[in-house]
Image 1 (cartoon, rainbow, N blue to C red):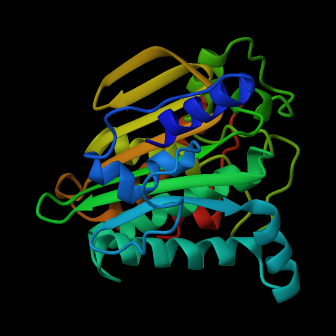
Image 2: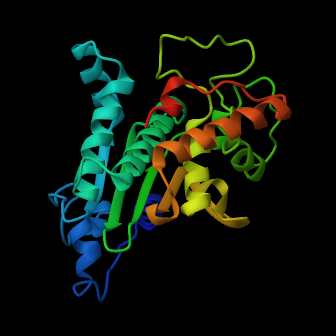
Length: 285
């Protein structure tokens, strides 16, 4: 819904002299309630963020990044702490709990995916929606921004030579690969929120091992599921992510994330161009 609403909105904006007509939408109660139609300008159903959430879902919601940064400066708190608080509330609403593997997995994933947008996208807004199926133990999170995209975001790393969107997506889910953190940039041991290039890697591995992880940016999409990697022609001005987790496939979320980070640090030693140490935030569940 996030991706399709974004594409329809962009198309409508590119044709300001055209009239658009929507048909056969009134019976589509779920997308109507979630804010899908209003997200691209059709006056049907709830506006983005209007539905109250709860009952294991989060409607399409828009976060103004500049406003959150401004609020953060006034409060004198670190942006990471504010994102952590936001992620805790989102996870509690989605899972109807404040403990357990489902809650921890969702909170960690929300936090790292949102931090990724704030730290790399240059976007003015962040859109998200999510659904949790408690009987199945499955959560699905989607996040979208219309920022600079993955390939542009990695350009600041002088150790990377990336020529295509496909190469950019392959690099962004590798451990220690970042446009903000690379060899020569000092890791501050007192700043647990400092970027180290491990957040997106861990989130993608969680999805790969216990569900699915999908990312698209530029002209390419990539789906990770188990040992399978599928690539698609998938136009996106910015970046869109979808993470689906079945917590029944994770023995212990804290232990699983710790193991993934350790494996990532070992792989970073072999890769050579990766930042070799994960930040405290990447291990903090």
